[in-house]
Image 1 (cartoon, rainbow over the protein chains, first blue to last red):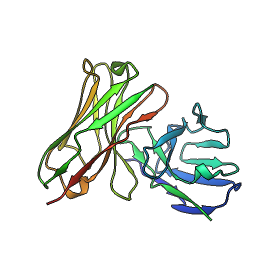
Image 2: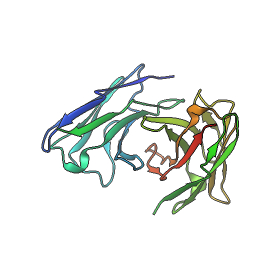
Image 3: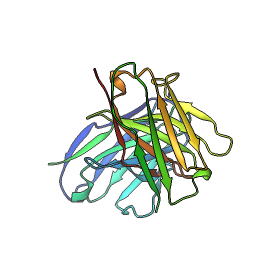
Image 4: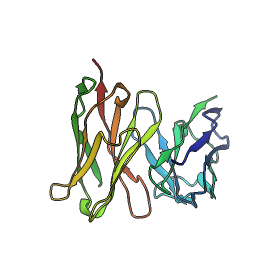
Length: 107
Length: 118
């Protein structure tokens, strides 16, 4: 199975900060990666598909990049509603695998 | 609007069986691949199983292979997960998740809690 290593596992930030989260795949996965946001007590929500395609309704402060084995999710100018946990998911092959998650906390 | 409503979560003893269902509405269920994803209390997300549309093919995580069976009833627009030989480590919220053609896991249900405990 492809291992997805996500880091950092948590970070503290302030409103207005720029935040970067990284996922590294144990083998090349083209751009077959999505990013998901999960607020406490809620189901996850897709933010980005195919590594860089922003989903409808997702604010433009979110962006994704990368291909092959290294991928990043960037949040420009963090907003109060962005304090949540973020996950990457590879769908290059089965079994699909998630990163361990990154909890973005208020500094 | 896309709606996915899971049901069937319960407290079950180790070694027991349980079936989950997911009622879909707001889209043409038969045209979409579907998944189950779980989340143990306080832990991250774990993909469990997928079933394609059409002549369905199925896939499972190693952790559930041989114990869980995913199936779908397109006429009833319902996704199922039959779980047997349940273990304490299967305790989790189980989410029903849709794949769109180019967007994996684009819609999620609210989840149903399965607790495996004696």
